[in-house]
Length: 585
Image (cartoon, rainbow, N blue to C red; front, top):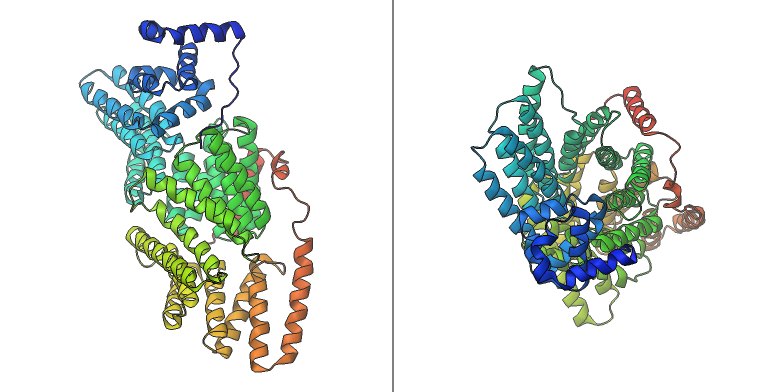
């Protein structure tokens, strides 16, 4: 899909002049480069509009030209359009720019500090753009070159620059799933922090701690992520860039969600969404970042319908800014695929979910290697959808084909997760649980039981006995025992345990309770306990009435158009709650 054109309506006379310059582009090329950056960009954008991508590519592949265009800050959305169009066209402008910058840094290694400082600033802007556009490997190369320049001078200014460089490097390594290198980057940043501290200087640690929280969250080290999100929140002070504040609030909210601190998560993410919209505007990628995390919160508090709407809004923004085969668009497709799958689970209508899952996989495989970790979650989502479609299929041959495809996807996801995280990890456990469900559908009941037990054991050791993830796996094992293995006593105990966890975490109207209640009704019918059958029919009826009332009015987007508290009040409220409750880890 092409990027949706944002508003670009210069004055008519000005537009005519730009068109005249573009018409004479070959003769005017050198003169164009001497124009002010805003006017120079408008000439290049006109080339883009006319589809003259080869000529545009030859301009943008020159580091001096692109560095100047980057100074036109109010044109950044349009620059993303041009850049993505070039990448889609096969012009490897991101890697060309990264290579050019790296070569320049090697040339100026012996130059004076002022020359290096100027190059570092150019690198921060270039790397920041590439990072924002999702070209993480190229951004990493730029930031590594900046870091190399920083190490050539053992003085205070360059220590500050090295810390800033490490924060940016950690961000792109997180985005590219290079978690081991990310941990090394954090340790390096700490050494520079210590150097500054010994000389009586302090660098703000909010962004660094926020990125560490993101890394630990991605690795499913939830207790550690929660601890560092608290440290990041302590570092939020007046004068911090809004982007840093928004990102810390987002990461802290996600850490709170997985710790089931939903009230705190709600306050943090709603304020992050409000801040991003208010400061960056409703069409900015940073606003879409906050919407994805808002959707994550809504999905986890069982407001599934609203989560779908929020994920769709985030995808719309990312498509309008980036379009094309872009990693940010792919992740939004994946999030929407999963929320749509959950939303339509009871209806069996998975066309929309499947479309988004396949779009996500198609984009990622076009951009990244076939063994990249980002493919694990997208393949997992598609496999879940295919399994449900297969179950509802009346053609045996088609059913077997879909189940086999789902099996191959799950195995691939499992191998990627084990390679990245090892056996003893929540992500690996999730893949075991998914395989357990699939083996049940394939009528391989012993293999299914083995997978579910393995998933439960890992999750219990990592998350505790009463976590949501544990409840999911317990409920799946109960279903296997009930529907296919006739182990009714074991199934009953597991259903009741799953129900107890769900009600404790989410309340009486939790959506997942439906499957446990229906399972118990079937179980009691099978053993002839009709009193219990009647009891749970009543429980299910009450649950349906509660669900009809739940989330029937609230519009999640309308809910974040204003914020009742300032950023300082939100931060203080969070920190005070921590000091009252004490450490949770």
